[in-house]
Length: 93
Image 1 (cartoon, one colour):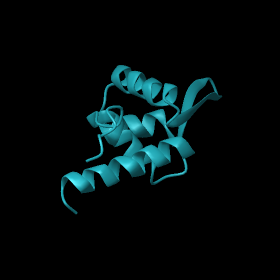
Image 2 (tube, rainbow, N blue to C red):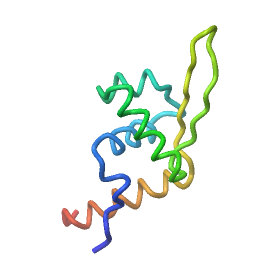
Image 3 (spheres, rainbow, N blue to C red):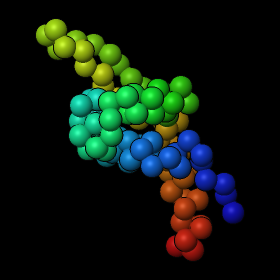
């Protein structure tokens, strides 16, 4: 059996990736609301996904407020799809 990607096996990181797989992009506030994560925890997990190359983050401003937009990368999409396939193997699907 394939090994499950430990980076994606975290509940919050898996939730973020699941959301990003279904949208073109999502900003920090949207991800925070959808995952019900604290800002600090979400920030740490986004940094881990970004460092791994699974997502890209673009920081900018809307008026005087900062805005961070996240997108899944090709590498992240592939990793997520492989993770799902590995889960299917474990579940005999």
